[in-house]
Amino acid sequence: MADRVCLTVPAGQRLVHKIPCNWEEDSGDGTLISVALGSLDWNAIVLDEKTVDLEVCVLLKCEEGSSEPPTMHWLQQKGSGRTFQGRFVPSEDSNLLEQAGKGTTMEEIIFEFDNSYSWWTDKQIELITIRSRSEANPPPLPLPSLSPMSPPPRASDPSGSEEVQGVPELRTPNDVAVDENTDASRFISQLDAFLAVAEEKCQKDDLQLANAEGLLAQVQQLRQTCQDMLQPARDTGSS
Image (cartoon, rainbow, N blue to C red; front, side):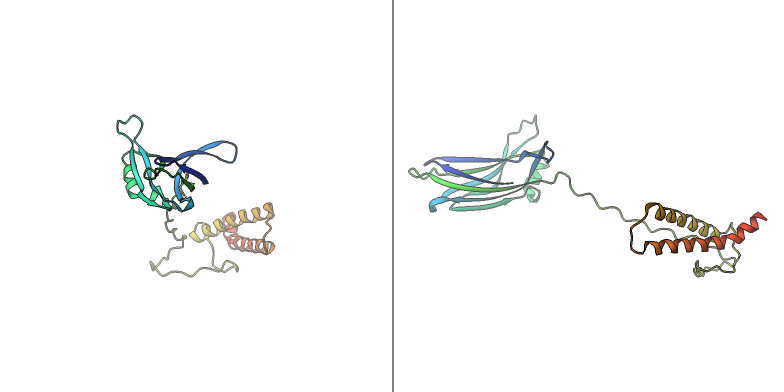
Protein backbone atom coordinates (compact mmCIF):
# COMPACT_ATOMS: atom_id res chain seq x y z
CA MET A 1 0.00 0.00 0.00
CA ALA A 2 1.57 3.30 -1.13
CA ASP A 3 0.63 6.69 0.35
CA ARG A 4 1.72 10.20 -0.57
CA VAL A 5 0.97 13.16 1.68
CA CYS A 6 1.99 16.80 1.61
CA LEU A 7 2.68 18.24 5.06
CA THR A 8 3.19 21.80 6.24
CA VAL A 9 5.32 22.42 9.30
CA PRO A 10 4.56 25.92 10.62
CA ALA A 11 7.44 28.24 11.47
CA GLY A 12 8.82 27.63 14.94
CA GLN A 13 6.72 24.49 15.51
CA ARG A 14 6.78 20.70 15.27
CA LEU A 15 4.50 18.37 13.30
CA VAL A 16 3.74 14.74 14.10
CA HIS A 17 2.54 12.30 11.43
CA LYS A 18 1.41 8.80 12.49
CA ILE A 19 1.01 5.55 10.56
CA PRO A 20 -0.86 2.68 12.27
CA CYS A 21 0.82 -0.71 12.57
CA ASN A 22 -2.52 -2.51 12.40
CA TRP A 23 -5.35 -1.76 9.99
CA GLU A 24 -8.19 -3.34 8.03
CA GLU A 25 -8.24 -4.31 4.37
CA ASP A 26 -10.81 -5.69 1.98
CA SER A 27 -10.29 -9.44 1.63
CA GLY A 28 -11.69 -9.38 -1.91
CA ASP A 29 -15.12 -10.78 -1.09
CA GLY A 30 -16.47 -7.64 0.57
CA THR A 31 -15.38 -8.48 4.12
CA LEU A 32 -12.71 -6.64 6.10
CA ILE A 33 -9.75 -8.44 7.63
CA SER A 34 -7.29 -7.16 10.22
CA VAL A 35 -3.68 -7.06 9.06
CA ALA A 36 -0.39 -6.16 10.73
CA LEU A 37 2.59 -4.23 9.43
CA GLY A 38 5.16 -6.38 7.65
CA SER A 39 7.45 -3.61 6.39
CA LEU A 40 7.51 0.15 5.88
CA ASP A 41 9.59 2.20 3.44
CA TRP A 42 9.59 5.99 3.56
CA ASN A 43 10.99 8.88 1.57
CA ALA A 44 10.58 12.46 2.85
CA ILE A 45 11.55 15.49 0.74
CA VAL A 46 11.62 19.09 1.99
CA LEU A 47 10.49 21.31 -0.89
CA ASP A 48 12.11 24.56 -2.05
CA GLU A 49 15.55 23.24 -1.00
CA LYS A 50 14.88 23.96 2.65
CA THR A 51 15.87 21.79 5.62
CA VAL A 52 14.04 20.33 8.59
CA ASP A 53 14.80 17.98 11.49
CA LEU A 54 13.22 14.52 11.50
CA GLU A 55 13.11 11.59 13.87
CA VAL A 56 11.18 8.34 13.40
CA CYS A 57 10.12 5.85 16.05
CA VAL A 58 7.60 3.09 16.69
CA LEU A 59 5.30 3.29 19.70
CA LEU A 60 5.22 0.07 21.74
CA LYS A 61 2.42 -0.70 24.15
CA CYS A 62 2.34 -3.37 26.83
CA GLU A 63 -0.39 -5.95 27.15
CA GLU A 64 -3.82 -4.75 28.20
CA GLY A 65 -4.03 -4.42 31.95
CA SER A 66 -0.30 -3.81 32.39
CA SER A 67 0.79 -0.83 34.48
CA GLU A 68 3.89 -0.27 32.32
CA PRO A 69 3.81 2.94 30.24
CA PRO A 70 4.25 2.88 26.44
CA THR A 71 7.83 2.97 25.16
CA MET A 72 9.53 4.26 22.01
CA HIS A 73 11.72 2.17 19.74
CA TRP A 74 13.82 4.48 17.57
CA LEU A 75 14.00 3.79 13.86
CA GLN A 76 15.78 7.01 12.86
CA GLN A 77 17.54 9.31 15.27
CA LYS A 78 16.94 13.04 14.99
CA GLY A 79 18.82 14.57 12.10
CA SER A 80 18.67 17.62 9.84
CA GLY A 81 18.43 17.48 6.06
CA ARG A 82 16.48 17.99 2.84
CA THR A 83 15.73 14.33 2.09
CA PHE A 84 15.22 11.34 4.37
CA GLN A 85 14.91 7.68 3.45
CA GLY A 86 14.42 4.60 5.60
CA ARG A 87 13.10 1.08 5.81
CA PHE A 88 11.63 -0.82 8.76
CA VAL A 89 11.03 -4.58 8.81
CA PRO A 90 9.80 -5.68 12.26
CA SER A 91 10.75 -9.33 11.77
CA GLU A 92 14.39 -8.34 11.10
CA ASP A 93 14.79 -5.92 14.04
CA SER A 94 16.46 -7.90 16.84
CA ASN A 95 15.88 -5.22 19.48
CA LEU A 96 12.20 -5.01 18.61
CA LEU A 97 11.84 -8.79 18.70
CA GLU A 98 13.35 -8.76 22.17
CA GLN A 99 10.76 -6.21 23.29
CA ALA A 100 7.98 -8.26 21.69
CA GLY A 101 9.12 -11.22 23.76
CA LYS A 102 8.31 -9.18 26.85
CA GLY A 103 4.68 -8.76 25.83
CA THR A 104 4.79 -5.45 23.94
CA THR A 105 3.02 -4.81 20.63
CA MET A 106 3.54 -2.20 17.91
CA GLU A 107 0.93 0.55 17.96
CA GLU A 108 2.03 3.12 15.36
CA ILE A 109 4.98 4.62 13.50
CA ILE A 110 5.60 8.26 14.44
CA PHE A 111 7.30 10.82 12.18
CA GLU A 112 8.17 14.03 14.03
CA PHE A 113 9.23 16.97 11.86
CA ASP A 114 10.91 19.76 13.83
CA ASN A 115 10.90 23.33 12.49
CA SER A 116 11.23 25.04 15.85
CA TYR A 117 14.58 26.63 14.96
CA SER A 118 13.06 28.51 11.99
CA TRP A 119 10.88 31.30 13.40
CA TRP A 120 9.84 32.91 10.11
CA THR A 121 9.61 30.16 7.48
CA ASP A 122 7.07 27.38 7.04
CA LYS A 123 8.35 24.11 5.57
CA GLN A 124 6.53 22.06 2.91
CA ILE A 125 7.28 18.32 3.02
CA GLU A 126 6.29 15.53 0.67
CA LEU A 127 6.18 12.16 2.46
CA ILE A 128 5.86 8.92 0.49
CA THR A 129 5.37 5.66 2.38
CA ILE A 130 4.96 2.07 1.20
CA ARG A 131 3.41 -0.38 3.63
CA SER A 132 3.26 -4.14 3.21
CA ARG A 133 1.34 -6.41 5.51
CA SER A 134 2.84 -9.35 7.31
CA GLU A 135 2.06 -12.86 6.16
CA ALA A 136 -1.09 -13.90 8.01
CA ASN A 137 -0.51 -17.52 7.07
CA PRO A 138 3.14 -18.53 7.10
CA PRO A 139 4.19 -21.20 4.63
CA PRO A 140 3.61 -24.76 5.84
CA LEU A 141 6.44 -26.68 7.42
CA PRO A 142 8.23 -29.10 5.08
CA LEU A 143 6.96 -32.67 5.15
CA PRO A 144 9.11 -35.17 7.04
CA SER A 145 11.29 -37.39 4.91
CA LEU A 146 9.80 -40.76 4.10
CA SER A 147 11.36 -43.84 5.64
CA PRO A 148 12.69 -46.35 3.10
CA MET A 149 10.16 -48.96 2.03
CA SER A 150 10.61 -52.58 3.02
CA PRO A 151 11.93 -54.81 0.22
CA PRO A 152 9.33 -56.97 -1.55
CA PRO A 153 8.92 -60.53 -0.18
CA ARG A 154 10.95 -63.26 -1.84
CA ALA A 155 11.13 -67.01 -1.59
CA SER A 156 13.61 -68.25 0.98
CA ASP A 157 16.51 -70.43 -0.15
CA PRO A 158 16.21 -73.93 1.43
CA SER A 159 20.00 -74.17 1.54
CA GLY A 160 20.19 -71.13 3.78
CA SER A 161 22.24 -69.16 1.26
CA GLU A 162 21.73 -65.38 1.28
CA GLU A 163 22.50 -65.08 -2.43
CA VAL A 164 19.98 -62.82 -4.16
CA GLN A 165 17.88 -64.60 -6.74
CA GLY A 166 17.29 -63.02 -10.13
CA VAL A 167 13.98 -61.28 -10.80
CA PRO A 168 11.76 -63.54 -12.94
CA GLU A 169 10.61 -62.27 -16.32
CA LEU A 170 6.84 -61.90 -15.88
CA ARG A 171 6.10 -61.36 -19.56
CA THR A 172 6.89 -64.97 -20.51
CA PRO A 173 5.56 -67.98 -18.58
CA ASN A 174 8.28 -70.25 -17.20
CA ASP A 175 8.27 -73.92 -16.35
CA VAL A 176 8.67 -73.43 -12.62
CA ALA A 177 5.75 -74.89 -10.70
CA VAL A 178 4.02 -72.19 -8.71
CA ASP A 179 2.54 -73.15 -5.38
CA GLU A 180 -0.25 -70.77 -4.33
CA ASN A 181 1.06 -70.85 -0.79
CA THR A 182 4.54 -69.61 -1.71
CA ASP A 183 5.68 -66.00 -1.48
CA ALA A 184 6.13 -65.84 -5.25
CA SER A 185 2.55 -66.94 -5.84
CA ARG A 186 1.21 -64.36 -3.40
CA PHE A 187 3.31 -61.66 -5.05
CA ILE A 188 1.94 -62.55 -8.51
CA SER A 189 -1.62 -62.61 -7.15
CA GLN A 190 -1.16 -59.16 -5.60
CA LEU A 191 0.35 -57.84 -8.81
CA ASP A 192 -2.58 -59.21 -10.82
CA ALA A 193 -5.06 -57.55 -8.44
CA PHE A 194 -3.24 -54.23 -8.73
CA LEU A 195 -3.23 -54.44 -12.52
CA ALA A 196 -6.95 -55.26 -12.49
CA VAL A 197 -7.66 -52.02 -10.64
CA ALA A 198 -5.45 -50.07 -13.06
CA GLU A 199 -7.20 -51.66 -16.07
CA GLU A 200 -10.65 -50.84 -14.71
CA LYS A 201 -9.67 -47.23 -13.97
CA CYS A 202 -8.22 -46.72 -17.45
CA GLN A 203 -11.41 -47.99 -19.08
CA LYS A 204 -13.75 -46.12 -16.70
CA ASP A 205 -12.02 -42.73 -16.73
CA ASP A 206 -11.28 -42.74 -20.49
CA LEU A 207 -7.87 -41.19 -19.86
CA GLN A 208 -6.80 -38.68 -22.51
CA LEU A 209 -3.09 -39.48 -22.39
CA ALA A 210 -0.52 -39.96 -25.10
CA ASN A 211 -0.29 -43.67 -26.04
CA ALA A 212 -3.06 -44.47 -23.52
CA GLU A 213 -4.32 -47.36 -25.66
CA GLY A 214 -0.84 -48.87 -25.84
CA LEU A 215 -0.45 -48.57 -22.07
CA LEU A 216 -3.80 -50.30 -21.52
CA ALA A 217 -2.79 -53.09 -23.89
CA GLN A 218 0.44 -53.65 -21.96
CA VAL A 219 -1.48 -53.78 -18.68
CA GLN A 220 -3.84 -56.40 -20.13
CA GLN A 221 -0.93 -58.41 -21.52
CA LEU A 222 0.85 -58.39 -18.18
CA ARG A 223 -2.37 -59.46 -16.44
CA GLN A 224 -2.69 -62.39 -18.82
CA THR A 225 0.89 -63.42 -18.05
CA CYS A 226 0.17 -63.35 -14.31
CA GLN A 227 -2.97 -65.45 -14.78
CA ASP A 228 -1.09 -67.98 -16.96
CA MET A 229 1.52 -68.38 -14.22
CA LEU A 230 -1.12 -68.88 -11.54
CA GLN A 231 -3.33 -71.25 -13.54
CA PRO A 232 -1.30 -74.48 -12.90
CA ALA A 233 -1.52 -73.95 -9.15
CA ARG A 234 -5.25 -73.28 -9.38
CA ASP A 235 -5.79 -76.42 -11.47
CA THR A 236 -3.85 -78.45 -8.91
CA GLY A 237 -5.89 -77.03 -6.06
CA SER A 238 -9.21 -77.78 -7.78
CA SER A 239 -8.33 -81.38 -8.71
